[in-house]
Image 1 (tube, rainbow, N blue to C red):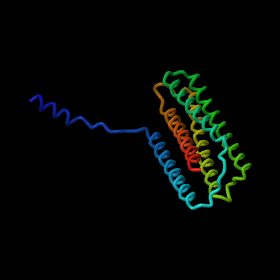
Image 2: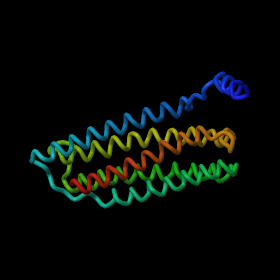
Image 3: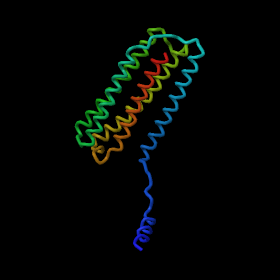
Image 4: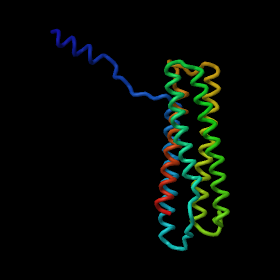
Length: 196
């Protein structure tokens, strides 16, 4: 009889549903769409490269240095997350600020990379190799600017004490997007170096 009562009690309990924060869900949809865009572009790059008429040029070393800056910014973003979990508000604000500053440095270095490409006579028009380089770096820079806006929003929330150990969603979204952009750049950089 007890077994029957236990089975009935178990049957009456509602099943636990899987749920995700709607903003995180939207972020992941956005990330998947960005992955699809860059996957299509890298495929197009490989197909076009195989057709010939491909300009050989030296990838400016500043792109490698900018990769290091972006990796460092991922470390400071992780520091922000650790600080928020410990309710260390001063460290949280400082870490997000440093991450933002490193993002700006990265963008400046990307611009300097374009200047170096022009100095090498690699232009947006004229040869597909140069066009792809500008499109890859430009599209990533555009997404990085959107990441900087997400960081500004997180920094504003940090100053208003809306990010803390019991309220990490906004920072988790900012960190996830920032780390994704960093990983995307590292992929693009090594892709361009390897398939150059």
